[in-house]
Amino acid sequence: MHKIEVTENGPYLVTGGVPLLRVEIVTNAAGESVAWREIERLDAGETYMLCRCGASAIKPFCDGSHMSNGFDGTETAERGKFAEVAANIDGPGVRLQDARKFCAEARFCDRAGGLWNLVKECDDPALRALVVEEAQLCPSGRYVVCDGHTHEAVEPELEISIALIEDPFLEVSGPLWVRGGIAIQAADGTAYEVRNRVTLCRCGSSANKPFCDGGHIGAKFRDR
Image (cartoon, rainbow, N blue to C red; front, side):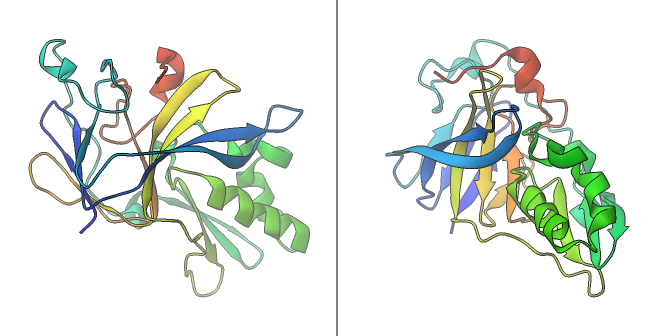
């Protein structure tokens, strides 16, 4: 079984042979996030521990730095389901679910005036396609596009994997992009909702641990 366990004030314990890779955000000439590019695949093995405090000298893996730097990894994220905390923005034939607290600041939603505005213009097939594209590119799952009538989510097919996000435009390293519905367990044993895509903090700065809140940008976090 693929699983991520959040350890108390320590790293993420990953079991089940989850593939580990590195990806980067691709931007256009205007600096807008438009796509993902895979950079490399790492040899991580069946079980491995990923740094959560941001201080390891062998990132992305843990080297025990959390034990000497006083890392406080207290989990502050709510344990409720996404649908319970997301706001609904309705447009022609489309519903956009938006849970702002999960935002990892990857900025795929900024193109063409903002995803939250574009959803109102989904009677235009081209804009509707752009709405779906922007929402599905969001790594954190902040945005989910649903059919406006059935409210069934329109989710991308993602490889079961963990991707280390790099953000060349801002010159920072981003969170862990957990893809394909991997189970995540809190340090107290509680299971978080299993979702197709979420982002976990790996810089130690998030105020919504274990999830990313974009704190890596202010912290100027670099993996390498």
